[in-house]
Image 1 (cartoon, rainbow, N blue to C red):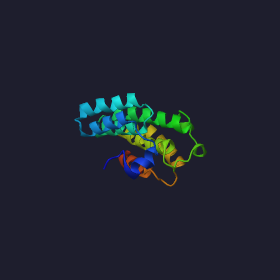
Image 2 (image 1 turned 90 degrees about the horizontal axis):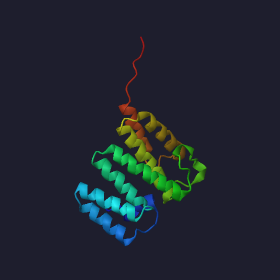
Image 3 (image 1 turned 180 degrees about the vertical axis):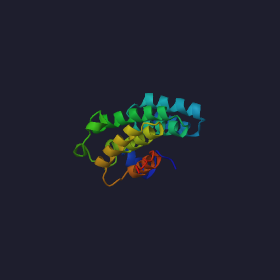
Image 4 (image 1 turned 180 degrees about the horizontal axis):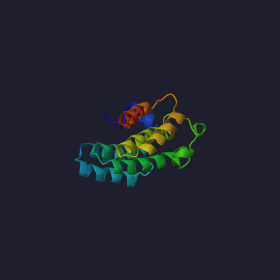
Length: 167
């Protein structure tokens, strides 16, 4: 499946079109080995810093390579760009459900999806406290769990140390 076309793409990124040069770079990145893919993705980001699809592909690339901190860095950049485009607060903790329609395709929806990704990445990096804060914000903004935050929450609960009961 090509993430840049079809329903998944429209649900995350809206109807925006990628410039031809960026589309070409992303198509090359898809078939490239990891080191070359990374360079192509950052070139695409430099060419179109407002393209949310590029941020998604960057954090997905790093996560797939097991480079969790780099994935987190790319996700935070994507979160910031999506917040700017959606008119949301730069600090994710200050975002309110009334500030955007998170169910509609576009920057606010991508922001919500990336918040979930960031929670997962924080969990993998050992940042359990912040992962839980991110998941609480996600639940507040997406009570119907339309982006699948409950999956990350279940993972967080499964990896949490079990408390011993006092006898």
